[in-house]
Amino acid sequence: MAVVSVALSVATPCGSQLTSAEGCSALLDLQKAAPECLAKVAPKDLCGWRPTEKNALRIHCKNGRVVLIHLEHCGLTSLPASISNLTALQNLDLKSNGLTSLPASIGDLTALNRLYLNNNGLTSLPASIGKLAGVTAIPG
Image 1 (cartoon, rainbow, N blue to C red):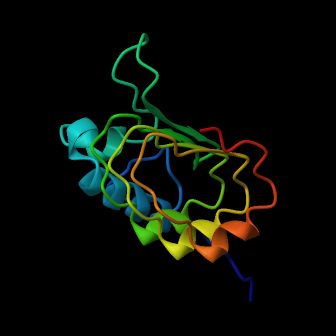
Image 2: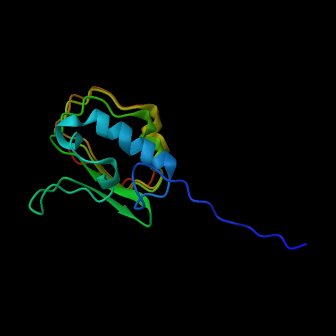
């Protein structure tokens, strides 16, 4: 008797550019948190979203995973804890929003090497941010 294995792919609302259901869920949570920039973006278009070539705002995916999020001036007042599901995220730019705190789960973004948080209302950072040993720049 031969054993046949079949790889099943799980369809997500984020389309084929994002292969992780958890990553898709994190992007959908981020979309709810940043309606000023992302409200009109279809879930299947979040991965690869860039409103204009002249605008720096964007979400970039590579090999089915989110690697860059640039949401400057997007009205973010909180960052969803599910951001930690974006385990390949390398660059997170949240400048000039209304953030007053960050979730402890931000410390789980171990691939992160750039974090931009200037011009927010942050009064403290979670202790877990110390786990981000690969971050080489936190300008601001």
